[in-house]
Each structure stands twice: as structure tokens, then as C-alpha cells.
Length: 228
View (cartoon, rainbow, N blue to C red):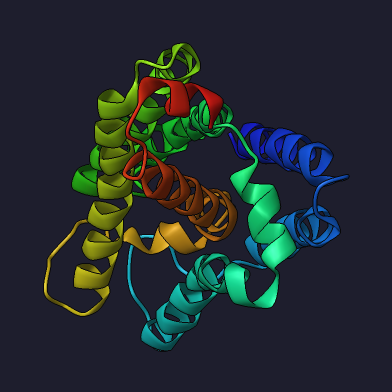
């Protein structure tokens, strides 16, 4: 399963790099470097023991969360630090951004982790099911946007995608803080391939969702959606 997650991520990196190659050198370099760093950390791991929290995991979780947040923060400051990169990202068609999310099919890794007893059912099922739903519907949403008729479905779809991540983060945070009792503890989220998912696929998906919502909520006509 790890190889499949790696392969999906590599395909997305290639697609994004090729798209931005002539539009933004900054993004064309940052995206593959970001991916490589996520792979290195994935191979190293974050939480040493699956199924239980051990001493030092809270600090590791804080660092882990900070690393997850960095790309999203970078996206937020793009207009100030790299306006040309902001322009290049805005040039990506909405239907293309939607179709990109098909890589979320890698969320089936949560089902395998549940079967192996590495993930608590509530986390594995919520994250796995919502990831698969977003991935399976991605091409349909992309098609509607391409036709210029998918604004409302796309808004709802993006909100579902963001809700997926919010649930997962709250469950893991609640568990490590002792607010929730999950069996086993979701510490496998800090092991391969979930580190790669958390540090690369998740922030990328959040950025795509926010970028799409930013533009969709500002769209007033179907023609504008199609041309976006």
C-alpha cells in the first residue's frame, strides 16, 4: 500500500511541476522539494510505536502539526512574497484542480491499517470513506465545472473535503491530549505511509480546496466558472 501512496503522490508532483514549469519557477521547484522532504520524513517516521502513545509523542505531534501547516501558511502569504506564483496558481482551471483530487483514492490505506489493527475504527472509517468519496467524485465535479454548471456542487464537495481533514485532526489531537479514548491509539498516523499523506497530500488538498472555494465564492456566472 505504501508504494501505491508513493506512486500517486509522484504522479501529482509530476503533473503540478509540468504545469508550473513555464508559469512559476518558484512553484515548479518548491513542489518537488516539498515532496522529497515529506518522503524522507515518512521513511524516518514521527511516532515510534503504533497503537499507543509514548513519552515525547506530544512534542512530536506539535512539530508534526507545524510541518503540516507550513505549506498552507506558504499558500496564504503567496500574494505578498511571490505574486507571480499567486498569478500562476490562479491560472490553473477549476476543473483541473478538482480532477487533481482523484489522488485522494490513496485514502484506502486507512482501511488496510484498520484491518491490520493499526488504526482505530472511527478514524480509519471516517478518513478512508471521505477520502474515497472525494476521489471518486472528483472527475464528476471536474466535468460539471468544465461544462460551467457545477458551482454549487463544487462548493459542497470542497466543504466535504475540508471536513474530512478536520475530523481526522480533531480525533488524533483529542486522543494524544487524553480527551478521547481511541483503541488502538492513532499513533500510526506518524508512520509510513501516513506521514507522507499528512505532510504532502493533506496540505496540498487543503490548498486546492481553499483555492477553489476562494474562486467559486467569487464567481457569479456559469461562464466565469467555465473559464476559470
